[in-house]
Length: 209
Image 1 (cartoon, rainbow, N blue to C red):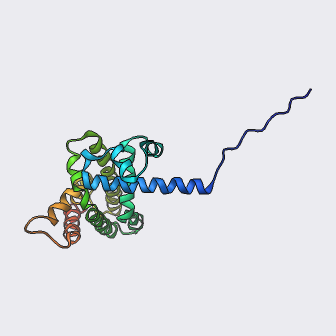
Image 2: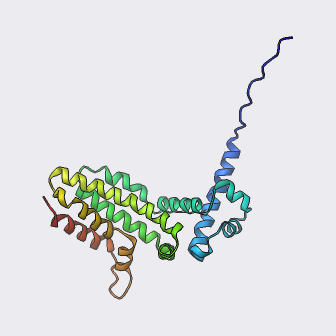
C-alpha cells in the first residue's frame, strides 16, 4: 500500500494575534520607561516592569530576553519620541557644515526630552551593564560626527591630520553631560543648541585646511 506523505503544517499566523503581541510589547516598553524614570536603574527590574504593565513576568520575558534587552527597547522608543529619526535628513544635506548644525540641534532636543532620565545617565558610571548600553549608543553619535568630518576633509575644509581631534571635540560638545552643564546652574542657557552650534563651528574653523 502506497504511503501518503503528509504536507508540513504551516505555522498559524493571525493578524489579530500579531497586533495583540505588538500592543503588549508597547505597553511593556512604556511601563519600563516609567519605572526607569521614577525609580532609577536600581529599581529597574523585570518584576517592577511587569507590575507597572499589569502583566506577568513570563509575558515580559517572552518579549525581552533580559533587563538589558528591555533597556535597549526603552532607549529606542525614547529616540523615536524625541525625534532622532530626523538625523537621516540632516545627514543627507550636501553641505556637511549645515548637516552638523542640524545634528547639534537634533541632539539638544533629544537631551531635553531625555531630561527625566538624567539619573539613569549618572548611574551608568557605577553599573557596567548600564554603562555599556549607553556607551554603545554614544558611539553611534561619534560615528555620525566622524562621517561629517570626513566629508569636510574631502572638501578641503578641514585638515586631515586634525580630523580625529575634531571628532573628539564635537563628540564632547554634543554629549548629554555638556548639554546638562549648559542648562543647569545660575548661568543656565535657554537655547543651549545655539551655544553648542557656535562652539562646534569654532572647533571646525580652528582646524580648517
